[in-house]
Image 1 (cartoon, chains in turn green, cyan):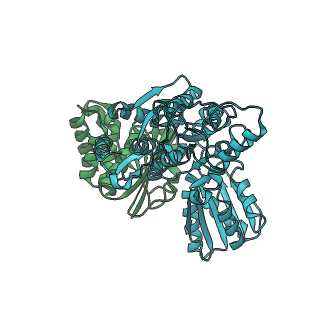
Image 2: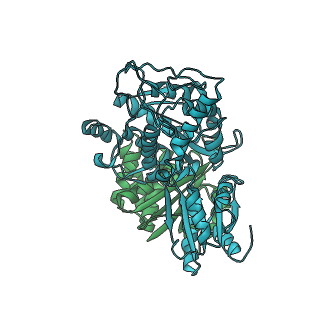
Image 3: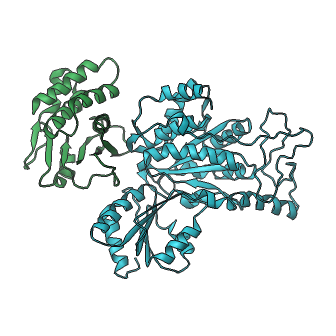
Length: 169
Length: 395
């Protein structure tokens, strides 16, 4: 089993952190994972991308060649990477932020996050959706990985966000 | 290191396997190896090591100092090492350039220390967030004069941890600065990383003088000797200077004889041990007619490419340089005799290509596949270059 996952958006959306959580969940599932990232020198607002490869065998080349799953949370990210997803691949978009003609699973992550009270958890909702539709990590490991990476005091909010993601798909 | 001390550190490092960045793994390796002094100046993409050390050091009785710059950082390392500590700093290209003079000073004064250089695109400030392999030659020749150095190149997060431990042990054994050359990609990459158990961590301590204090000779011994180090406070009087010095450590700046003896010994202590310093990974080489020779992050791509080529029934092998300096000349010569051609992919416009070509001494063709700008090679690029080499092309 090998899954190449690419997450793209703009800086500040928690793109890189989502990749970290996803990779860590895979490790907790006993799999191998590599997470790499690319971002500009800006702390927010620039383009952000995280690549995650999950495999049950050692991973040599650490970058995504042709994503099995591509998540785009901004229009510029879609314009740049949208074409890279393979024929068998799955494209997930924030339906309020991205307009696209391709066959895509659109979920209003940001709006759902606003409804939960904090837009900042949109990425966690996205992880729930991603895990539900792809099955690349187990829900249990993903919950543990989320809890290991979020600030104290936000556990409940983040678990609700994850749950919202699982229920969205 | 005692088991009790290890256990206390181990507890701070959290669960294993961990999902951590290469930079953080360097910090983990350092504290497990016994590093208790870190001085540095933050720089992308090396800052995470400093951050980790800042969090860890105060909790294990160590010292973390953020210095005013990289010149001061390595100077502090040298002082702390003479005070008996195992020391490390981390930096990237611009900071590594600033450190060069004092790296020479550490070589001349035979001061063990570890320098992690998380390479980024240069020259100058270049592309701060992008990886490169542009400091391979600077690691070897960056300071002036004649000297030998040890440099190791990890290609995974696990190896960052493992090779930093090894770097400390080699620094102690040979009394030299040891440079660990990672890059922005390995430094920022997160991977599954196993934190080694107490029994699996080797701890080498520098040899201390034992004889009578009055007759102590701090820089003596035979032509390739690593003299016992009388760190400050032990009572063995040592004069430490970057000037050419006698066995007693006193300046002898006009003596051709003393200079030749000292500097030859500094080189010979590494050169004569070079067989024991060979660190290579070899795969698919038994029947190989062509080979890809690579190091660091590029080797991960090279291995993918070699596997793709093997699926096409191409007899292509893979050799990875883990120990970069001293350069494994003999092993490359042998490879050159075995194969018809070697491809050297690297993230610079031509660095390790040159010593490889020199080592091969014309026994086979050597083609270069440079790439700069911040993106690592793709497997397809290496596959294509190997196919070109097999078809008889030079580049």
